[in-house]
Every structure is written in structure tokens, then in C-alpha cells.
Length: 451
Image (cartoon, rainbow, N blue to C red):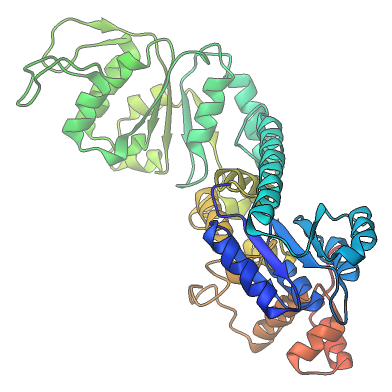
């Protein structure tokens, strides 16, 4: 595991807890301590654990009952549980294994024995996680890979990709920043006869005009100060493949003329060179600008526009296809859980509601960043509103709930989610009686998930 394995020690005897903590911390594990079954259950709800060392004999809730609660749907821990028992209770320890314990340790035990058992469990979990992640990777290898959407707008785009991909037609992809224009360009290339040839991307808006020219067309040795060797440009590198010109609306009029010539003649000269170089390249361009307006303002050549705009694909902003948000959230949770080498979590209904209500000025890219951030800073088995940048103080004034009733509603939902929708516990935490809480839930139309 890329992170330290997490061990929860559950024992009513403080010396035993502290000794185990010292041993395990020295071995590099992250260790939590619980003095009772109730405390262990609360800690298992709050955080993911890899191994739980659970004492069999404890006052109040004993080890067997704690084990059952930990493995129940109410808590649903994925941790492997090692029972700790004395010689006189071996039969009970065997019963615990039938209830779902991984194994048991006989007291008194030495550090090497504990370390060996835990290492065995951690290795087993790593193997299981690798299998889960591998299975997810295989499931993600769909026709259009990372492009996700069930909305009518996205279905039309999928249809266009299928129709356009087998051809060599130039494609212009329009849409706001962060809508996924490059993903669509890659999908077109990946489903085309050129798929085994290079896909070369150039961010035109990120480069000064002089550098962009040398990047696109290359240069000969001695073409300018510092050109101590011949360099091939992106058009040459993309030969028999696809060249993706991102932010094409930002290039200068001079470079527009050079680009138009290449599209017409399918040949060019390197900077400082005189020998024409022929290329076989499919061009896909993208822009977040209104090119028709740019033409009217003499900032973009009309003839180049029509050369690029043989096939047009417009990607709508995320705020216009919010029905895609749950699918995108699920995809990003899987993707970044894989990158963080952890098991995917769920998103709470109240957190998803916040995502659905937000306007997403940064579109899909912003949503992905929000989910990655939530996975990094979140500690529980669910993404909660407080894990989102606009779920707390970081909310922009425009997005903050203005009305007191909305603040109250969000607070009630958060407390209900923290208590697993246990109205009695939530009412206690809110310091109101149950009937008052029921009345507020009815007034704000708050219902448990699935109802």
C-alpha cells in the first residue's frame, strides 16, 4: 500500500493497548486505540481500517458482539479482524472466526508474532485491492474511454464521433474551457484508422507566436540564434496520425496564414529551410472562443475557419447537462481512487445535491478537481458536503446559502448522515426532541436515501 496500513487496537486494558501501539508504531503502522466495543464501532464508521485487533473479553459489549456489529450493514467495515484471546477461551475464538474474524492471537503474545500475522493480512489486502483495481481498469476500457455522459447532448456527440472517426475530415470542436474537448479529439483519433499512429497535441494559446511557429513546423540548424540543430515540428511528428490544435482561436494572423497553407497544400518548409516537406496528417482543432465574432473583428481568417470547420462538434457546458454529473462523479471517484491506491468511496446524497446545484464555471475539469480534492482530504467512507470546496467557508458568496432555513436544512442533513439516519441520535446531537426533528424533516422534505 502507498499509505501506511491502519491498525485499530480494541482492548479495555490500557497497558495492553499502549504496548501494542508502541510495537506497531515502531513497525511503521498507523495505530488507533479504542477502549470498548462502542468506541471501536464509532471509529470504524469514521475511518477505514486495514486490521482490527479485537479483545474477546471486554465488559459491556464483548468481542463477539463487537465483531458482529463491525461486520453488519450498520457499520460494514472491510477491515480484517484478529481476535485476541487467552487459552481458556479458544472455543469462543473459533466461534468468532465463524462470525467473520480473520484469525485469533493467544495471549500473551510477542511482537514478532503480532507483526507476522498483520503482515500476512496486509499482503492479502494488497492483493485483493490490486485485483479490484485491475477489474475496474478493465471495466473502464469502453468505446470512448474517459468521456462520460447519458444526456441527450452527449449521446449526439457519441454518434458524431462514430460517424466522423473513420474519415479524414478536419474537425472543429467548440466549447467552454474544461468541457473535455481534447478527450473528444482523442476519441476520434482512437476510433479511426490512424489509431496506431501518433496523436500530437499542441496548446496554441500557451505559446508565443514565434515559438508556436517553430513548434508546428520545426526549424533547420542555424535558422535563428540558438538553433544549434535541426528540429522536427509537430506536423512532421504527427505524420500518418492526428494533430490536435487546441485553442486555435488564439493564434496570430501570420501563423493563421501558414496554417492555412499547410491545410491546402499538405506541405510546408521548416523555419530557415527551403525544401518542402509533405505530410499526411489529420487535423482536429478546438477553441473556446466565438470564431464567427473573431472573423467579424478581423482577428481570425474566414478562409481558415471554413478549412477547419468541415465537421463541427459543440460540447455543451456542464451546467446544461447536469444529468451527467452523477456518472462523472462515479467515474472520477474510480479514477482517482485508483491513482491514490485506495478503495472507492461513495458520495453522500447531500454532497451530490451540492454538486448538482453548483454552476460549474470550470466545467468537467473543475468537477474532477473537486472530486480529487475530496478524496485527498476526506477521511470517511463517504464524500460529505464539508469535503467540497463550496460546502464550507470556501464557498463563494454567490453560492453560499443566503436563507437561514437553507443553512438549517444542510446542517440537519449532515447530522443525519453522520448518524446513519438514526433520528434519535441525530435529535440528541442537535439538542432537540425527536418530534421536532421529524417536523423539520417534513418541512424541508428531508428523506433518507432511497425513499
